[in-house]
Length: 368
Image: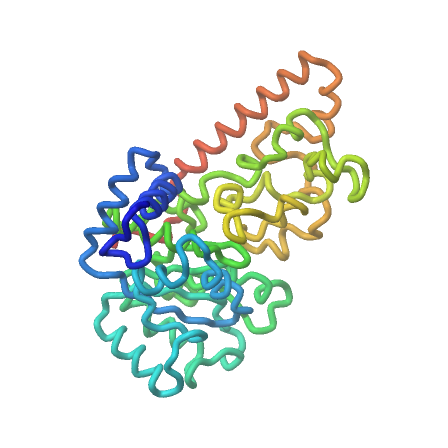
């Protein structure tokens, strides 16, 4: 039996190395990077202090983190990070809680995690201890080591920002830029709905291992986590390339056959997120097991990617040289054509992936 580690109570050496191997894989370091991750976590002089603010949100991101099974939430809070302030679950309340926040943020050595959108049109729609979300952002953003937008609400506004957006909801970076504010805000966006605790832990560990924040894509997401589309990692991908599509729910193409869901509204080809690698519910399931991807990790998906059960607008799959699902289906009956189509799909996707990761875009993060 593997012995319990002295640095991480309740964690065996075997489980610790298994977890570090997983983190190294997520960070793109491969198995060889496991030793670097393990060394960084063991050698960390102190746990990173985390302040968690909740704005306009359903609290699903916090619940998802609290239900994390790998690592357990106890290890997460008590050993890997020091969650010093969290509006919903901390033991202190009222003025005592606000005093904790004041003490932690006075030291100016903390990571600031934000859950929920900023109310800019009706500031009073969301207040914490008498302060609006805009006032909290104005105070904490300049002090934090890094600002991490946890979930699609904090990243891009999510459903609160959907038309007609009565509260003027915005993501953190969008608020910081408005009215000549911060020209190049440093915000790491971790959009999904809800946000995934593994994304947060992987991002904080990346900063510990490398001493800097990860490279971000054009909309502020870490490339090492969000560099591939849902389509790239989907277990239904083989059916897409073979031209086998679900035409309607409940027909013979569903059930155990698991055919591609593109024609019934899957937004996987245009959605960049690690859902196919970092699964949900203890890493055992994800949306595409039973339903089309709705594109919740993309900006403005409530307005731009709806209706959810309609095909992606335009009919063509972006980045696939105009190849449509119908054309791939027709090619299925002709072996040569099907082979060429499949090759074209793979080549186009690889090309797009390279371009996406390499494009300069607007950078929302940077060195610590």
